[in-house]
Length: 274
Image (cartoon, rainbow, N blue to C red; front, side, top):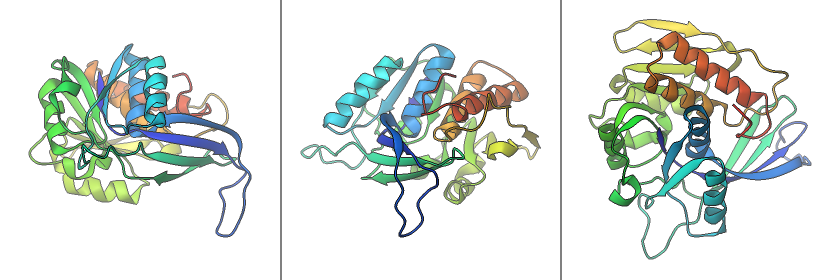
């Protein structure tokens, strides 16, 4: 199993409510983690499948060093590729973010710096030539083509933006039905996906196949009150990727992915035990 995607060094904090314009909120229970769509999905896949590889791009800074050490401790084999559009003479900084979680468990994210999308280079992909499944959330078009070549099952997020399409078929596209940016991006490329899954939070979600058939799934019950919504969508996508690669049917795949996302929501931080 593998993920091709981005990483951000994220500072988390809890607040009573998300600040409004002009307001000041005091954050508590602060902690920091390497996160972002690529890292969160890779850790979820490592736990579901026993091992996972992450192809990503990082800066040459302390946050990059900490990211490599932390993800290795979480069972992820990190493969570094250059960032798309970067100048080899001026390594970019690892992207950072601040995430605030309110009393209901909802999160708000602010990023700092450009997203680092990995490009297709031979070194990062050495030995990755017979993957059961890959989740693609960021990378250039060459990285997407490479992922398709070596993966029996390829699932993507519309956050991959301009790399999607270009004649590369997807087994599934996973997105939030409540995110206007993801919906707009998906509308341009969903025709290349055999299956599109729209998550709807507590309402579960709905799916649509290329042949026009449609259906819904229910959200999994929580093990307690909602604690932290950060990472639930990426954990769901990892569950979908794992389940399709394992050959589970559609209903069982959705059930497994929904359970993984519910476990993420019920614990603090993106790496609560699945």
